[in-house]
Image (cartoon, rainbow over all chains, first blue to last red; front, top):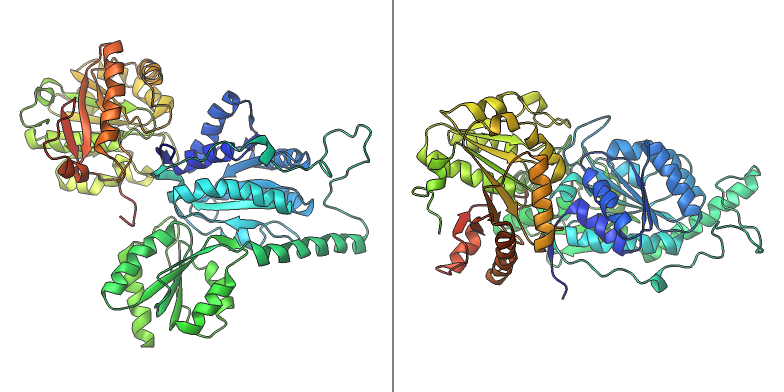
Length: 355
Length: 232
């Protein structure tokens, strides 16, 4: 086993991205993830990769668009307002069917908000954010080790489906430290081959073209239909989630990211008090793990979504449950992190209302 | 084992500065020192001049520290969680004021050290102990050469000469005695090369119980971990 190192979430994701083969990074600093870009600035030149601080997030995302056209593993990291600025480019990249990886270390919003942890960018990540019919593959880690492994997964998914992948981490995960085991650097032969479409100089081969537009509405519709065929495959094959103590559960919590860790403590409290609670923790926020939640709704008396937001994922939870059982919500927002005890109190109130 | 009640270091200096690489454990050690000083002296202040980390700073412990009678020097409330590198002028005052024992928790890496450097006028005025904190399980801190380079570079930027090193090798709950001993070997080399002494090997409370009477090469300093995640 490799030696473990004590890493901050942002540093761990940065190093993991390099080991996963990220060749190029463009970005613009913003709290609470500036250490990620700083780490890249320090480390990438050391190992012969390309780092560039752009003049803004708008510039960074368009640089990513350009690099992605060459089939190179490219990424950026930002936090909420920064990701909002990138939305136009994200839509172009998704429309042009290109691989790229984004990290949003979410902070309190809306607007400038604050620099504390939040999960209020769920809608932005999973429902669009930019214009047009498109989907991002959205992943969310709960531990720093999971975030490290997820960086590899993110680049693989982006390359396999030629689709932008977004990792949503709340500020807490970005800023805390945990012991981590870093996988080895990916060998070049594990890198995808994008020779069939990438723009790297025409030479004598047939012309390649990468674009997100077509003036003929029928052809543009065809492009969209092809994308949606791809999204259907992703929904079939790439759903990831963790089930925790669901076997005998009477209450199913649904929570993602570090909220999922807080809930494990709440679940222990609940079980000590005689409420059999369990949890489904979505790891892919899109594709959303509807099926396990549908299945759970057949067995449990209540499905409760807990978020660091005013209630965003709860809409997907309610769609999955389809009214079969009550689906209450509990959340704190603006950068306030719910404690295990306050969630337990909320659970008791909801539970007493139905039993 | 270090007994703060009798250890000369607390009596010989007025100011205690903790700096080092990012994530080396400066805040936890600053909190431990401040609480130890409070056992001996009536007036103790802790100044948070960390402009690097957005969370897990001394200011997050402001309420319990104030309840324990310590003066916590931070930006005023509306700016406590501002995204600005803000140092209040009071910090200089507390470094000068002879009636106060003052602990300074510096931000990590070069950016943190530069802030310390801006206070050199005050740090040179009074007897000031400067500690460089090292966790060999952190990036850029696992080899004697790199530690020495970082230490001198940060010392220059902080415009301080280092009184002693503090050895803080740990991997949170996964720390082992063997791991700490490997860290000591690295720090011994650093200390022999630079002639800067090692003040202590830090052992977290939870491990200290398991370690019992286990003898470390450097004096053992047991600390309680204050900075916790919401699920701990």
